[in-house]
Image (tube, rainbow, N blue to C red; front, side, top):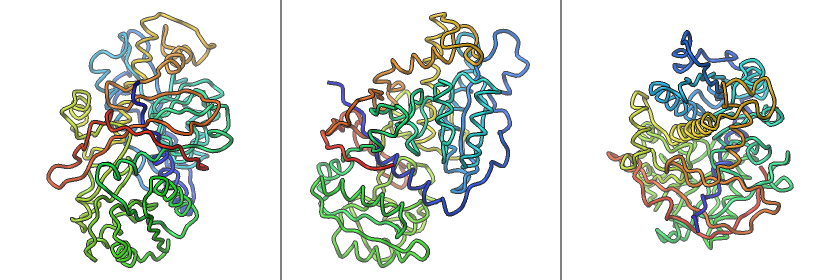
Length: 450
C-alpha cells in the first residue's frame, strides 16, 4: 500500500493560531492593491507569438504579523516560473505571473480575488498564502483552480476547486471539514516516542484564547500517545519565560512543544539556556523551518541545536535529491531559504504539469467562456481543474508526500500517515533525520474546531 501523507493538523492549527494572535493588531488594506509585475510578467511584455498563460499569486506580504511571514510560497513559485520561462514556457507560451498583496485583511483579499479573476482573467491561482482568505468562496464559485495554497485557515477543507498543498479528505461542500470539525493525527508525537524515547512533554502557551485552544489540541494528542504532559502558560502581555523554563526542567520534560509566535519561541529558548534546561527536542512547525535560525535564536545556542521541525515536504537542504537540487539552484540568489519556498516551488510545478497536460490534449473551451480562454488553446480553467481532480498521489517529483483529495463522507478514525523530520545543527543547517516516505505510523485522528 502506498504510504499516505501525514495529516496537517499541526500546520493548519499553528497557522490559524498566528492569525488569531495577530487579531489584536487590527487589519488594514494593502499598501497597494498589486505588486509591480514579476520578472516573469515583465519578460512577457512585448513578446510576440502565442498568448501568455496568466496565473495569479496572492500573498499577505504586508500583513500585521510582519513583512516576511507569508512571502515564502510566493517566492518559491516565482522562481519556478522564471526558470520555466527561461526554458521556453509551456508549449511555447510564457507564464505571466500577476502578484497581489492582500495586506493580511479580508477586505484586501477580496480585492485581490476580484482583480485577478475578473479583470486579469487568470487561469489559476498558485501558492496562495493569505492570512485571511476571505475571497475563497468567490474563487470556488468561479470554478478557478487554486493550486498548492497554504492552509492557514479552513478554506482548503471547505470549498471545491481549492487544492491545498497538503491535500484534503473532507467533502469540501461549503462547510469546514465534517460538520465544522477538522481532523489531525498524532504522528509527530508517535515519532519522538518511538525514535527518541520521549515520555514527558511540555506544552507552553499564552493565557490567550487562541493560544490556549491550540495548546489543548496538542495536549490531547500527546495524551493519546501516552505521554506525561506538563502544561506551562505565560502571560501574553508580560510573559515570564524564565519561570516556565525552570519548571519544565524540574518536571523532566524530554520534549517541548508550544502555542507561541516566533518571537515567543525565541524568548522561551533563551530562557531555557539561561536556566540550563536541556531537552531531547524543541519541536517547531514548517513555517519556522527556515535558514534564519542563527539570527532568530542567536542568544540560545543549546536550545537552538535542539530544534526539530516536522512537515509534509522534503527538507529544502537535502540537495542529495535532484528535485531539491534544482530548487536550490534556481533560488541561490535569495537571501534566505525556507520550507515554504520549496512548497511554493512545488505548487508552481503542479500547475505547470496540469497546464502541459491541457496543452497536449488540445482541449478548448471547457467549463464556460470568458476567463476560461485566458491561457490560449487547451489551457483553460476547466481543463486545469479537471487535472487537479485526477491528481491523486501527486508528489512534485518527490518534493511532497503524496497528496490526496478524497472527499470522504465520514472522517477517518485512524490513518497511516508519514512525516518529514529535520534537526538544526550549527554549521550544517537543517539535517534530514529519515526518509519521509518511510517515516510512517498508523495513528488515531482527533477532531478539532478550526
